[in-house]
Length: 185
Image (cartoon, rainbow, N blue to C red; front, side, top):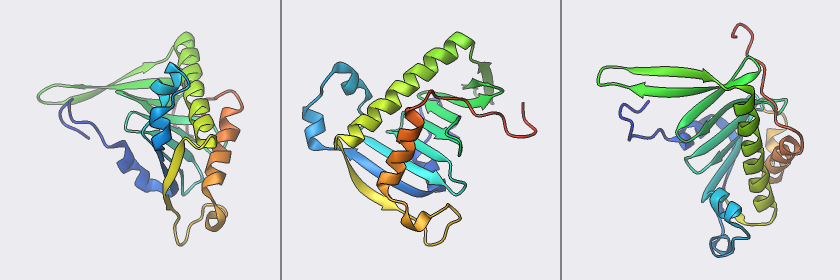
């Protein structure tokens, strides 16, 4: 964990846990052609989409956003610069690091129903826009990683299109928060 506030954590370093992953970059044409100010604001220079060993899907947009889904397509964790979020008993908890010269304190705020509704709508819009841009060829796959052996179902035949299809299945339904793991509230 970074010791000073201006030291950002490397979100992409987490992606080593993704046994199947693809990395896409914005195409040159995408830099020149923006259909709207919304697309311009949402268009990450780099995307990384992948699966953990247990089949959980993660989507990263540059170093500023990340959403992790469980097998059922429910949100487990997320990051939206500079805030970390995690599923917390049917809502999301926003986790904020407060640093002093001697310690770092993690402060939790459970989102209210209104805050959660806004957060989910914004995240749905971001994921939908990314999916649209991927399908429109506005991103180019530059790296594809699969393990030699994996317990991820059919990992040997998983393709970049399969990851995009998983994302499509998630964004074509209302986003949901994952229940807490057994033993945690």
